[in-house]
Length: 125
Image 1 (cartoon, rainbow, N blue to C red):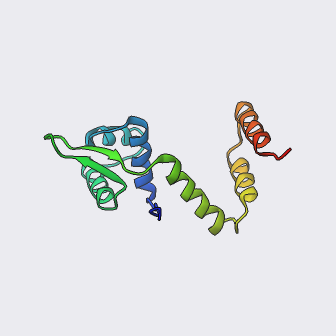
Image 2 (cartoon, rainbow, N blue to C red):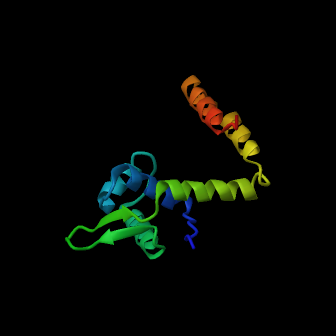
Image 3 (cartoon, one colour):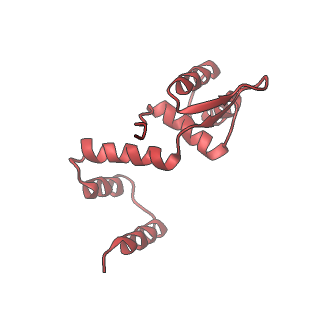
């Protein structure tokens, strides 16, 4: 059975950085986080240690500087979060989720074209 992935908002920010950078030190992650939020280094370190305990990341401790890697896939994590959101927030309606998302964050013409292409590929002919 697949592990249920339930990262907090802060853990998701770290996972997104690790998915973008690949294996990284706490300092690497902290420097990237500091570009968008006021987070102390020790806070980042503690969060990553908690994520290690929750098996959201792995840590290579073979060198003096520990290197962390995301232990969960971006695709599976996003999929589980969206599925829970559809079930719990939108009463099982994917359409309501999409309508809310597009209403809150208008898509560019290119994004709309990609959405149309995706929907066309899913339409049964």
